Length: 382
Image 1: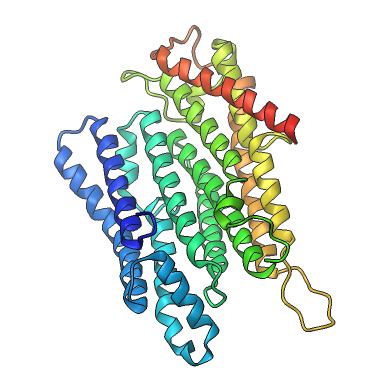
Image 2 (image 1 turned 90 degrees about the horizontal axis):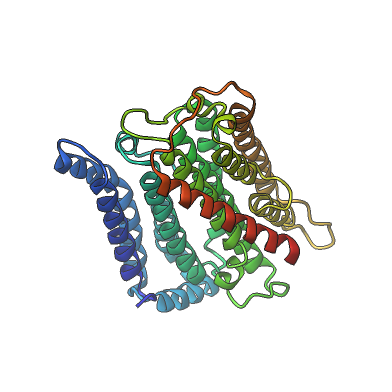
């Protein structure tokens, strides 16, 4: 079932539409049908790119079974006289990976989402974006696990390009974005870009250092990096629930100045916000720091191929990607530090601020406790 390319692509698309319908059901709009239609139309170009790649790859191979596709690509790569036939499968793979990355929303191209997100509670907006990204990553990992060992298909180069696009666009938007809801979504995209870079380096090591690669498959290798990514997502979700606990229809929290002095007004919620932001900043030992550090080490370990007898040099492409990760991580830390300063050192905007939704505050505290326990376990294990 999961070995069929069409089944994977259709399941991915249907799951995204179900998540979209759930998210739209939580907002109050006068013309819900028009909103659903607008959301559907805006996602059609990305879906068309994805399915164009699926059709092109399956038609050039003559099968939708990923195992058959894998064997056919491997045979084509070994036979020099079939090299002219490799352009169509390679283009299909490129379209599939690019379409999936854009479709899951890691690159902010869908401008109608911003209008819809304004009407959603924080937890619905973040949870729907998180579900989109997790489904897209699962699709990419399952697909790449089947085709990346083929020598002529540079899957790691496609992934590194996507990671570069995600990191640069979201880092630039973080510098100018003012709304808290969009800032949290951009944080999520940033961590996804780091994970794509890690997946790219894993693919490179699988193809070029297979003798030293201990994992039986890329899927097994990438499982080591999923916990840190999920913990970073949990920190963002905890912040979303915290902001929802302070919001109601009369006084919604939309901008950073609305949470200034929170720790002086609500000590428990303010302390929870400081802890969650500390994780996102990337303090040493915590999950976000470990994810970034492991990715940078993996990127800097990659060396360019060199003639026999010459010392291999650091791969310039991955060196550049590592530099982008460092710069974008500094921007994320800068934005989080500004929020921490406003929460701790700025005069409170209001005294005795009411917690409008105590259930959201409880979920936030549960996230904080879970993150504290899991991060301590990872530090002790490390």
